[in-house]
Length: 586
Image (cartoon, rainbow, N blue to C red; front, side):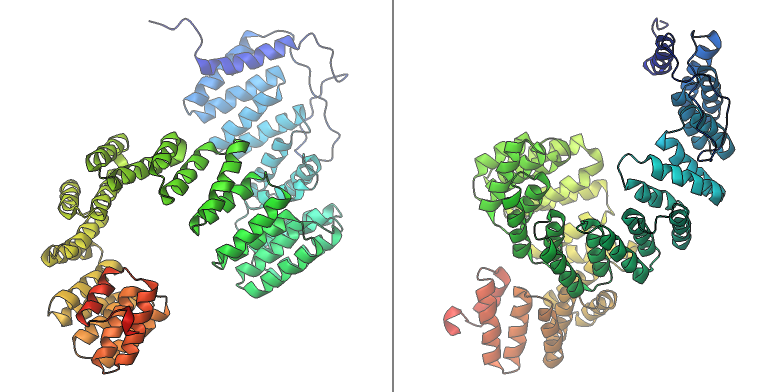
C-alpha cells in the first residue's frame, strides 16, 4: 500500500522550508539583499544576509525534496544541483552548505566553490564555510585563496587562540610537511602575529611535523615566553624530547616546569605518563595521588589511577578510586567492569559476578568471558561452556576467539582432553587457522602428543614459514623430547635469525646445544637469555648446564634464586627433584 505520509528523511527539507515561511513576517535584519558573490575570505565588504521568501513556491519545495531524495540515494551530482537551486530560491545558508557538501562528495571542486560563494554571501561569518574554502583552496593549489580563507578561520574561531591551531590542522591537507610550515609562516606574517603566542605554538607543531625539531623547540619556547604559565607549549617540548628519546632531558625539563608551577595538573599528568612509559607504576600512582588530593573529583585522573592501581595489584586503592567514580556517576560500564576485576582478584566471586552482569557496551563481551571463567573456577564447567556457546552464537565472526578461550579455560582446570575436543571441533571448521593450530600444539605437548604438536606446527609453517613462535616451539620440543637434535637446531636457528634477542629462543638454542653435548656454548646462550629478565625455566636449564660442567655451587646459587622468585614453578620443581635440590641446599 502506498505510504500516506512523507518518509522521515523528506521531513528535513520540509521543516527547513517551514522555518523560512514562519520567519517571513519578521522585519529584515538588513536594508536590502545583496547579489555579491565575493570569494570566501575576500577583502570585499561583508554582504548582507538576504531576506527569506514570503511564500514556499512549488519550485522551491520541489528542488529541496528532490535534493534530499538524491542525497539519500547517493546521487551527489543531482543533490548538488537541486540543493544549490533551493538555496538560491530560499536564500538559505543551510541549503547552500548542503550543496557544498554534496559537490565535495561528488568530487566536483568547481561546483563546491560555486556553492561556497553563495554560502558565504548568505552567511559571511560561518566558520565552517571558510574552513571548507581553505580545504578547497589547498586542494586547488590556490595559496592566495587559502591564505584569505585561513585568515577568516582565525578571525572567526569561537575560542580565542584556537584559530591558529585550526589553521594548522587544515594545512595538514598539504602532503608535504615543509609546505605546511611555509604557508603557516606566510599566514602569521600576513596577520603580523610574531608576538602572538598561539601563532608561534601553531608554527611549532608544524615544524615538529616537518622534523625540524630545533625550529620547533625555538618556536615553542617563544610561545611559552610570550604567555607565561601556559602549559601547552611546555608539554609539547617535553613530548618532543621523548620523541627524540632524550628521556633524562625530558624529565629535567618537566621538573623545571613543575618547580615553576607545582600545582599545574597537566604537567603533573605528563609526569605520571613519563613514569608509566619508564615502567615505574608506583611513582606514577604517587603522582595521581597528589593530583587527587587537590582535585578529588577529576574523572580522568580517577580512571587512570584505578587502572594503574589494578595493574600493580593495589586493590584497595583501585577500589577507592572506582567507588569515587561511582559516586560521580561517571563511566558506569567501565567502572563496573574494573570493580568486577578488583572483587575477582580479592576472592569475592559473588560480588565480581554481580558487577560483571551489570556491564553493557564495549566491555560487555569481556565481562561475559570473565563470568565464564568464574563459573569454570567454581567447577561449573557446563555453565561456563554454555555461556561461551551463547557468545559464539551472538558473534559468529568471533567464534575462533571464543573457541580459544574455552580451550584455555578447560586447560586451566586440568581438563586437557575436553580442551583438545574443543580445538578439534574448531579446526574441523577452520583447518588452517594459525591460532587454533598453535593452541592445539601447545596443549598436545603437555599431553605428551609430540606427533600432534609436530603436525600442527609444520602445518603452520607451510603457509607461514617465518612464524617465529612455531619455529621455536617445534625446535625446542624436538630438542627436549626427541633425539632429532640437528632438525631441532635448524628450526631454532631460523627463529633466532628472525628474533635475535628473544629470551625464549635464546633458551631454546642453549638447550639444544646442551643436549648435543656443547655445554659451554649452551651456557652463553642461557646467560644471555636470563639477562633479558628472570624466567624460572631458563634458570632451571642454566643450573643444569652448570651442574654438568662441575660448577655445582654456581648451579645451586642459580636454582636457589629461582626458587626464591618462583617457589611453585612446576618445571623448575621437576628439575630440582631430579637433582634432589631444595631450599635447604642454599
